[in-house]
Each structure stands twice: as structure tokens, then as C-alpha cells.
Image (cartoon, rainbow, N blue to C red):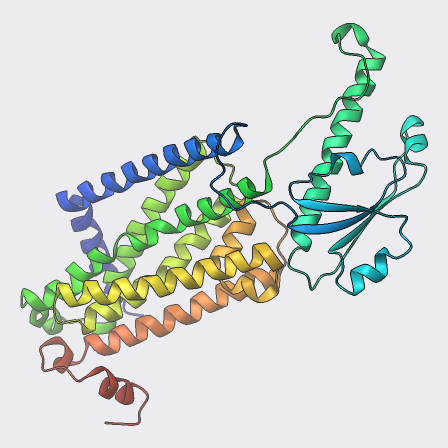
Length: 395
């Protein structure tokens, strides 16, 4: 295999890092990241303060839940701002769940108080309709409620065993643990966007590298070199991917230092960098076909909007429904990885295979365009005519 494209990659990478323009942009981007983190921390503090005005939609009565809890310990600790509670003896609740009259049914054993007093495990059962997108909200709230009650009971037990360490021995004290549901969702989306943002900040490097060859009339020199057009594009593309990988690493370090919790850091990093490859390939297609900087910039703006939509929409859909198809977006996988979610091998392979296929397709098209004299030197064919030629309908 001819490895000449590595020469192009090294040359492009070194020249880019030595460029004052790149260094200025690089540090400006880091400054923007610091500003975003400061703004987000301020926003988070405002949301969690009691007197603050909430900037998120109210989740009051977002979902309904039938609760059968004779002891009342669990029912009293379910957040009424999220779930509308219907107390029931459980006779009709399963039928109500099947007919869609309620979104869930939470059953606590009738002797829960006795079990707690004896130090035994309390049996609880949560029934959910897995076709209902609200199920994840109910499940998360019940998990939070269980954790809150468990913490309170543990604290009460420790106080009863060693009362001198705490003057408050009046009984169980209710505590709020964890973040609110809106804050959890915002942090997931916010961190996902920040991790993928560097991939869209280096389109100007490809434009300058490819479109600049046309405007500076240096494309003829590249074509005359003993290296194929595919290797030229691959070399230029890999250089940009390497630069993106460098910035993603920097951003992850900054985010961790700012207090963001990121599980599976290595896998998260590799997945984000891997996603950069087809994005660079798409940008190379646009740069290879464009006549000038202005045209390339306009088309890339629209193309990036579509790519961002493809990344974000499935991730948001997964938050609400946890559907398997939502895993096609690499952002969904990254979000599940950094939150410590358990991911099966098929769910990981789905975005990896998709990104790999798109990488091959985009770089093949970019190389096809770059080797054509009419596109490199003009006059170039129109988009429709070019598409027909590409699929073999028109010569």
C-alpha cells in the first residue's frame, strides 16, 4: 500500500499548528468553552435556588402514577411537581395502565412499616407501559424516591445506635438527594453538545486547504505530484481529524476539570473523534466542488445544520423513549457512555458501522471530485448533472 498520503498529513498538520491564524482560533474556542461553562454553572445555580425563576417548562403533572402504599412512607416522598399521584388499593390500577388512564402503577407491600422496623427488605414493584415515552421519567423519579428514603432511614438508624454524634434524634428526616429531572436532562444534552462542538470548528481549515488550492492556482502542482487525488484528499482530511482529536482531548480535560462527570472517558473520546471522519469527508466534498470561499461557507453552514440535527434529534428521542433506532446517532452512544449506562454490543456497533460507511462514501466522493479537471479547473458541471454522472446514469 502506498503511504504517500501520510506525507501530506504531516505537512498539513505541522503547517496548521504553526499558523498564527489557527492558534488564535484555537484559543478563542477554548475561551468560548470557558464562557459556556461559566454560563451553564450560573444557570444551574439559578435553577436550583428556591427564589429563582425557572427557565424550563413546568413538569407539574407531567405523568400520572397510581400508588398502593398503605404505610405512606414512599408515597409522601414522590415529587408532586413531576408525578400526579392517585392513591389506590391496586385493584383497578393494572387495568388503568393497560387502557392508558395512568402512566404507571407503584405497589408497595402492605406491611412495609413492619418490615422497615425489623430491618427487612421492603418489596416494591413498579409497573410501566414500555410503549409510553413517559416511562423513563416515572422510573427515574421512583429510583430517586427510593434512594431518598433509604438515605433517610439509614441516617435515622445510625442516630438511634449512636445518638451522641447527632443532637437530632426525633426520627426520620426527609432529605432531597440528587438533581432535579430538568437539570439532569439539561446536563446530558449540554455535555453532549460540548463534546461534539469541536468537530464543527475546523471546516475553515479544509476550505482553506482545498478551495485555496483552486484560488491560488496551486492545484496543478498537486495534480502533477506522483500521488493520487484520493491520497491527497485523505492526507488533508486526516490532518484535520488529527487537529480535531487534539481539541476534543483539550475540551474533555477542561470539562472534567470544571466538575463534569464523564464515565468511560477513553471510549467517549474515541467515539467523538471517530465521528469527525465523515464530517471531514462531507466538508471535503463541499470544498472540492465549491468555486470559492464564499460558496463553500454558505453550503457548509446548511450541511452542518443537517448533521447537527441528525446527531441531536436521536439523542433527545432516546431520552424520552430509549428506542433502539436512536442509537444510530453517535451522540446517543456518547451520552450513554459518559453517564455510565450499560450498552450492549449491537447498540455500540450500530453507530460505529454507520459512521464507517459514511466515512468511506464521503471520502470516495470527495476524491472523485478532486481528480476531475473540470471541477478543479472549470467549467464544472451542475449539481444535477454531476449527480447523474456519479451514479452512472449520465457520462
